[in-house]
Length: 180
Image 1 (cartoon, helix red, strand yellow):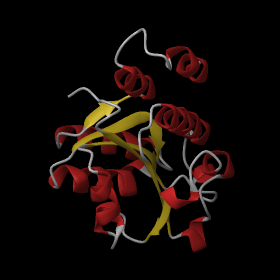
Image 2 (image 1 turned 135 degrees about the vertical axis):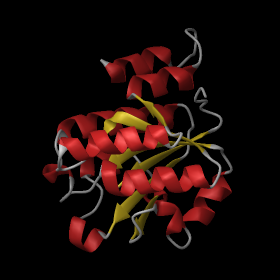
Image 3 (image 1 turned 60 degrees about the vertical axis):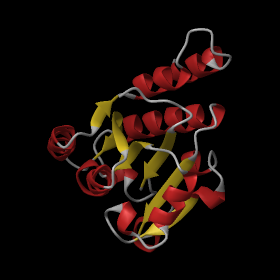
């Protein structure tokens, strides 16, 4: 499965003010998510952002929130985003078969969302360098479990270059500047 910008949706799961400081490699998580959001914006890939229990975990971190439209952000209580009332309908309205997932925590909301979408027949890719958990072991086991379940485990650069598709894409130089 190659990712295609015209077939993908980027899901940014719970990259929130009180959660990011608690995860291992929080800066790496933010770098990866920021790269993916920048690439998605440039390549017209729709973006959906979830906030899990914002009252307790805060809103999406400001550096990331300012890169997305407020309408793209929705609160959830379910760990598996497709189980949240209204969320599955929003995702289905976009009508794209590929979900590219980044965010936190890898072993909870990212895992359950990925497996939930996979069970619903979507092609799902989780971005290994743009997910995190409080403990690295949890993230590693989650990535392995998702891979066993048919979720593609990729890196942010893989996503960007697959979305670009060719070396003469007009957005190549701009996106290379985000990578470096």
